[in-house]
Image 1 (cartoon, rainbow, N blue to C red):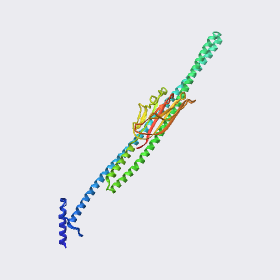
Image 2 (cartoon, helix red, strand yellow):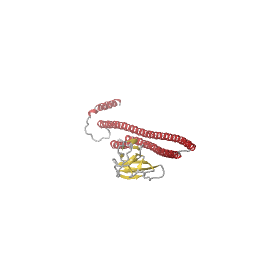
Image 3 (cartoon, rainbow, N blue to C red):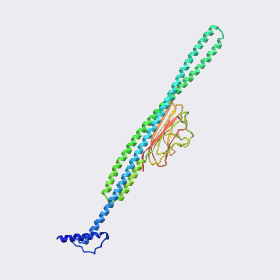
Image 4 (cartoon, one colour):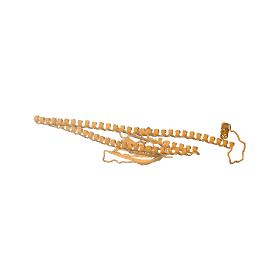
Length: 383
């Protein structure tokens, strides 16, 4: 019995040593008991199956490594977008500091004007004393009364003119201070709105990345469990990753203003092309879709956008503006002349834009404004 077992083991070893040469067996008829040749074929089949399983395992390991790399890239891109939003908030904070400095400068000018007014009042009191002395002197000498009266009339007229100038200066200074204060409040509201938008975008990015990671892990587990259709699943997963990556990277936001410190800004012309308001002072321009030289926003991504604009004018002129999409009016503002020192108008709209479509602000015919703010950002892209 032992001899037969040793003989069978030696025979199997000799057969396995010739496996790489793909030994051929003569055709056999079906038998109930396995033969040496049928065992050899089974060994060949098992060897092929093991080789294919090892190859599939290597392919799966490579695909898992690639998916982990793409996920890391997505997270890095999202962190970059959040940094850009933080820079946007910093820029708006700097603009607020500039406005506070402007208010401080206006307050100093008002104090100087009050000081000058007090000095003028002292001069007026001194002149009154001189006039009283002249009257007394005229009564004493009893001569040339008409000349003294003319001098008194001239002095009184000069005093009235100086007083009117001082009152005009005080009114202008007060109006400028009130206008600056209103403008500062508007910028504070705009800053608060941008901060809220930044927080909402951060939440959206996080909400987008969390299900993406979960979905990727589920897809990887699916690929590992099902090795019969790896190419189809890999293609679908690659398309999904590209789509999600494009959504994370598709960030567009801008905010710009017009500030004319010396005079009111007046729109030109009568059509929709040469009275475009050019917001040349840019606070932020993520995605570079806004052109500060032409005043036109051009969509580089198809999606849904949020736009807002504000105008600030004086009560002596009508003021207002129109938001235009592809040269067609969408929404507008209008303010008639009133009794106050200044007028403010604003409006907001959400538009769906295709690639290449434009949005800009035009001034209403006959209107005048002192300053204006134009802002917008991409809410989400569409297919």
